[in-house]
Image (cartoon, rainbow over the protein chains, first blue to last red):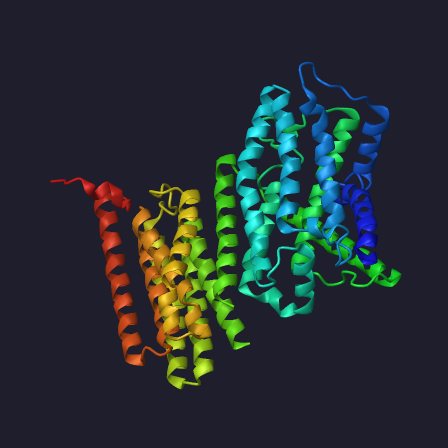
Length: 316
Length: 216
């Protein structure tokens, strides 16, 4: 465990927790501006969280079990671990063995599964519907996520995310190879699906028949809901940070000097902010896709990821 | 740098083949097919730059004109005459399943190619599996689509794949042979286009599955 890794392990979770609601705020603000509305301001998600945490009380529906109560904690905990270990700000990881491709994807999947189980546990029609939809999407997203990042790890010879990012940093020409391009497209599609953005799920909707994420968390209230919302926002920034650092790792801190760390933090904020703004701008032009067309989209992205792996084995 | 450009052209070839399988709108399919023609021409041009053969540059230009210009133009004209049926509505295998099948076909192509690559290992022959994948995907499109026009695109995809494999294995097929093949393809497309028009005039549709039963 190096000094750089420890610093990263402290700075990254703080940055992700503090910045994620702001990222959601930026996304909504960009969208509002493009649609000609004034928008509630970038700080609105934090205000919502404060309201839920301080002024509302937690209500548990009758008949729900421990699964319902622990799901927000599991979701939050897994996302926090990912925020600590994945090299976002520094190339060294605080807990290097956990910064592994398979471990990180498994942790992210665990959080999603916990939430789906909580949706089932409420026993309401919407909870079950949301959970079933989420599972359908998850079953196609996780393999694609694994395979797409695996394509990048083939030429490094290691599934350690820190090793993958450092090697891209050493050899920038790799970014324009077909392997990277195919993997990037596949990863973007699965990130959109996994974080519940358009065209897979509409994050702004409260219309029962179309929602996925909202349907699962319908029964949560107060601090529990705040935890779920914060963790979902953190998942979005974690995914965007992973995408940014896997394909454009420049700016990440390689030494533990304050200046390098400052640049690392600034680079991450700028990259994730730009990706988020691009995502929000793209969403203005999209309508939600029919649920039955979603597997098609995800099967396509899985195929692209598989082609990336095949190309990384055979072309280079 | 040459190897990287070659890989990039192969990646584009693969991506366009997948997109043709993915999209339903015939107009989009034709546009993607034109892009694939550009990718194929780029592939041959990269090989020509590597070999320094002026003959091969001529072949690349010919491929560009035929596969990115003339054939898409003919297809677009056939589509414009068709009117209503602008989408591949019900392929025999649904799109999600056919994309997964394409994944299997890719693995198949990579599994059967090593003996070919082993004959003369070089960056060009290492890309043979890409050409094989395009051939297999083209064949798959040909057998699972219902519209005459998308079957035609499948046939052309198959031919693009064969051309790619040909150039990757031997670098120069010879100007005369390539010209002969290209003329054959052009002729086939012209004949099939007329056939499509006739089918539509007679039956009012180009869904080939409707043509199984005998009529008086």
